[in-house]
Image (cartoon, rainbow, N blue to C red; front, top):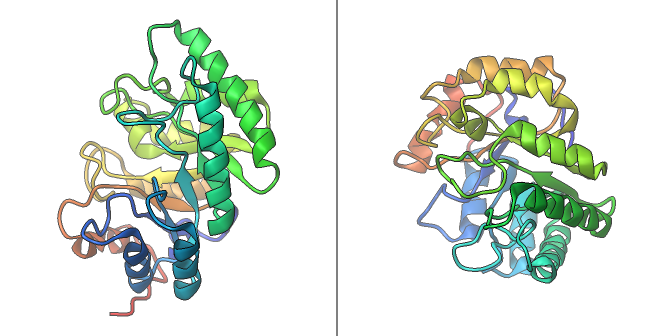
Length: 271
């Protein structure tokens, strides 16, 4: 999804609603995001709501839904795409996610790889690549599938933990609609340099997310220099959206001060 303009333009920012405005149901989180000046939102798992209702709220507010995850695949799980014996369930979940993405007009679906079980890692990675290739055909030209590594400190059993590993698998799949979700938080938590890795993988990045490291709070604290990171986004020619996916330290509205601290311009509120 190409938007263009400076990375510090408010029109390039997307708010992930997974943890923000926690006292509100998802439809009202969308409305709240509109009220504080966002044009784009993304979410984790919208499936407990009515898709048509959410589509109506997006039309009402004029916001666009950017991305969502495939369903978890069961209690305690984080995807099935690499899990032995779960191919049929994964494919059912993927079709469901694609149906929702079309109703909500969301261009991205994040394919959750799942946890590594007792089998060798190479076998699980091969299954992930096979399922991604199948999913790419199902998605067609309407939807881009995202692959994201999750750091091993927060999610020690997850199959994908490093950005180079995810990039290698995307290369093996070799489909134009399978791309990298570059989350600077997870990259930095694995002690990789987000700016260097951004340059290294710029050609396959479809979406970017940010959060403070460590803590996963607002991107105005911690070890990542987001001033430098936003500059690097412009240098690499990244023209997509920057998703703020974080757990607020306290009140969501108060926490949005990070936008001003990073020099995000063009923010308009309805307050």
